[in-house]
Amino acid sequence: MNAVQPSIDELVRARVGATWAFRTRAEIEATARFARMAIELQENGATPFVVTGAHDAAADEARHRDLCARVAAKWGHPNALDHTPPRTRIGRSDMDPRDRLLWEMVSVCCIGETMNTALMTRSLEVARDEEIRTTLHELLRDEVVHARLGWAHLAAERSQGRGEFLRDVLPLLLEASVEPGFLEGKDIAVWSDALYPYGELPWPELVQIYRDTMNLVVFAGFDAVGVDTSKGRAWLEERSPA
Image 1 (cartoon, one colour):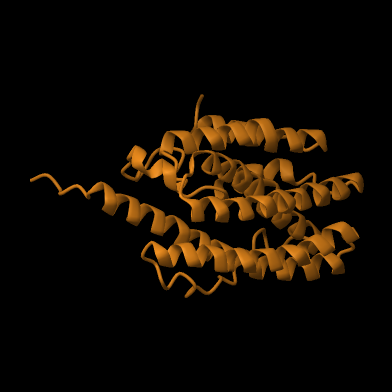
Image 2 (cartoon, helix red, strand yellow):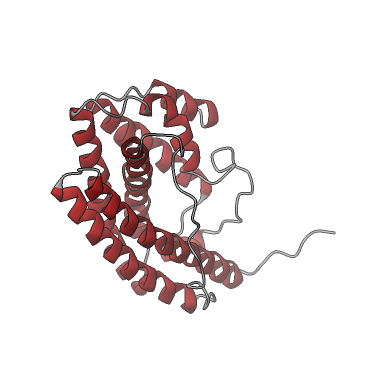
């Protein structure tokens, strides 16, 4: 017996609600992470621009959290704020603290926030729902700034001869930047073009945005500061060939 397919209205409500509930949880985690990183950046001699930017980013993410929760509640997820950020840290516990912090800044900002910028830019292009457009616009404005923090910190650390380890851990950073099976097409969500007006994107387009952003922005950024990207490029080609 064939499974009963959801109606278009049900599909839209479920997908949009899940997206914004996910974003709410991500913003809760980002708020805590930036607040902690701001302290650690200052302790480890980061530039004033990066330290101040991380403090500001924590406040930005708290505001984003509430914006995302409002949209999530409208689309059927009233309890999206009920999330406790995990205590797990990015990077290896046996690393020099300054190197581990660099790993985290690269993961969160150079990769994560750069990717968010690309995805939200495209979502804003297709979205027609006014509340979603307004919310995406506010989030996108700040994500651009947050991405720049990571690139500024990476450049400063590379100028002092740090960050060579990134060459070898780049595949781990990339693997952590996507949900398991995303690039391979596992558990692809049901799609309808009726989702576009709400800023949703189909899986093939999401993968293409990921590939393009990695190749044209992220890898190029690493190359510019002398980080060898060969292992990262090989990882991406293995999992998502052109």
